[in-house]
Length: 194
Image (tube, rainbow, N blue to C red; front, side):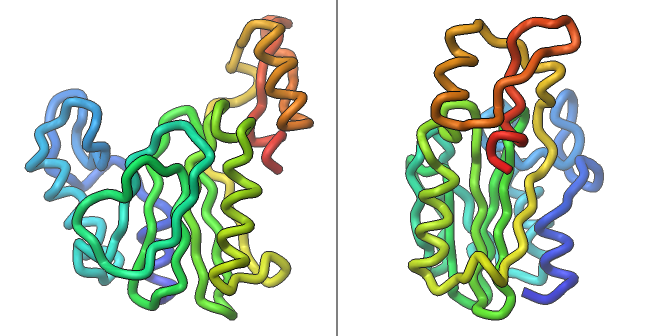
């Protein structure tokens, strides 16, 4: 992708769309109750801003798991039951949606491989990130020559969890156990992923 296309896909605000009410205005989530026609129009606007046809911006049906799939062609329907997409096909972009979860974007400009990963508490602890890196390598990407971006997510100071849940996640995602502002057990998924 061109620098302009990467910027349009990698960073997007909620302004400039057609959704109304609580979804105003640039909602891209098709699973939150927004008008499907508005979501489709917003996704078309995003594709156009990236210089892509709408079916060349590939979405996923995120399920909070550790499945990662390689995409090698344009498609109109989201990739089912997956939390990571990888492509080395020129002109194809992959997308991730998050609220509190960590969005991860990988790009190897030298080899033309990109990935989008949805890493929530369950998926991160289940290993979605190492699986994404493995799929990224299999598609021809070299992590040593790649950029990785961990996008905005809930912070550890705010993400309070029961102590047993914190311990279980820490055992699978070392570095994620923290204390919240209130001094209670918490999780910093970005720290554990990093």
